[in-house]
Image 1 (cartoon, rainbow, N blue to C red):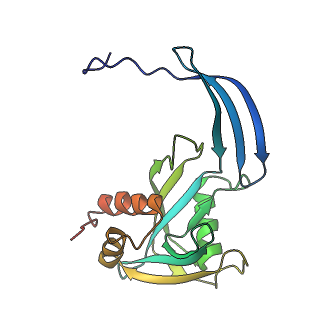
Image 2 (cartoon, rainbow, N blue to C red):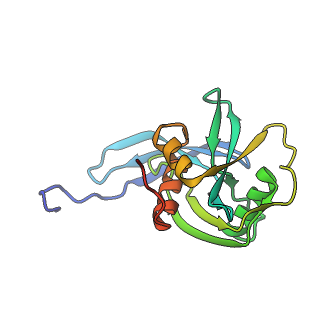
Amino acid sequence: MSDFGDPAIVPWRTTARETLIADRWLTLHADTCVTAEGATVGPYYVTGYPDWALIVALDDADNILMIEQYRHTRGIVSLELPGGGVDASDADLLAGARRELLEETGCVADDWQVVASLSPNPAIHTNRCHAVLARGIRCVALPHDEPSERVRRHWIAVDEVVRRAMAGEVQQAVHVAALAIVLDRLHRWNPA
């Protein structure tokens, strides 16, 4: 029992799983589950994605590298952090982050640090989202030419990124969380 007399929370048992989609980007399972009280919950949809790396990339002038790209589901051009899925072929999380930064922005960094690991939506997603701090950023190439991922780079002062995130101009909630955690660690998350 909790301090409030609430019952203990017990994980469900999965009694059946049907895989509806399985490709390199996404798996979708329909689970049948049974609660501790014996109630059947199903279908319960479980969505699997690769882990994601979101990069808070700082240059020597105290700017953050942000990108804009089209997001079809919402039909918007979205202001975001660079990053993306960590591939099975990546040696580790930071190798995936380095690859994503180079592909999306043509930039590299001298210093890398994983600051936080979050669950984007633990109710239905299996993956983790890793907030990565990259310092000493410099551009060495143009972004990779990917028709489904046209990216425009922007170097924006830290305080302006915070202002824009707080004003709702950064729509991706996990990106806002990554910014807040990384910049707070650097004592730079100062919403006005």
